[in-house]
Amino acid sequence: MKKAILPLIFVSFGAFATSATAQTNPQALEPFSIYAGIGYGQYALQWQDREKDMEFDDDAAMLKAYVGTHITPYWSIELGYENFDEASDIDNYAEFDGISLATRFTAPITEQFGVYAKGGWFEWDGELYADVPGLGRVSRSADGGDWFYGAGVSYAFTTNVSMRLEYLRYELEDHIEPDLDVASVSVEYVF
Image (cartoon, rainbow, N blue to C red; front, side, top):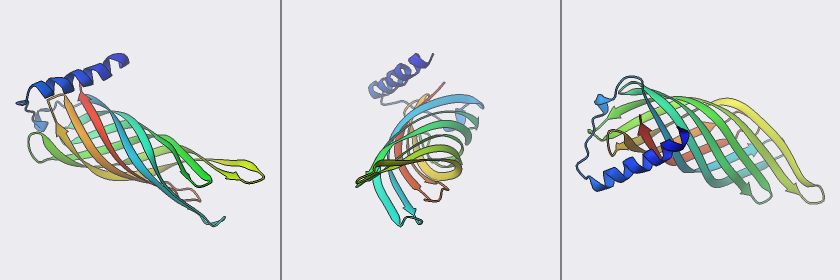
């Protein structure tokens, strides 16, 4: 089943490319319909270690996958996995990943286009390390659970295939207070 999802997404996307008259109505979504998506994005990581008077600021790529269900045509719940690639700033490095549970409220603008607000909880693990001359690599693990929030736009190519552009902010509570600002694009398939 999992191996069939990705080809289905691309076949549906290709079907749209050959049919410019595809229409969809967000209000026609069945309650509790299931959807899945994959996405790619860029994130900016900023943190400050007040104890060691260190700062960090860099951009890197991220990947995500999610599944969700429409409770109503305007409200859905999602379970996701986010993997943030390694970010570096001279001799400092950081890497994060985690699982999220979110809710999304959508306001349709047209039959195909909508805007939404999204927020939820992010359970994360992080690896922070630095290359120190004479000592080698010094590392520290961090983990936690924190709120995130954001907004986005969605465009439905067909009744089953849509695309999202999304901006999310993760304010992780650790003594270094890392902030992750993420801009991403996703392809979504409704089953």
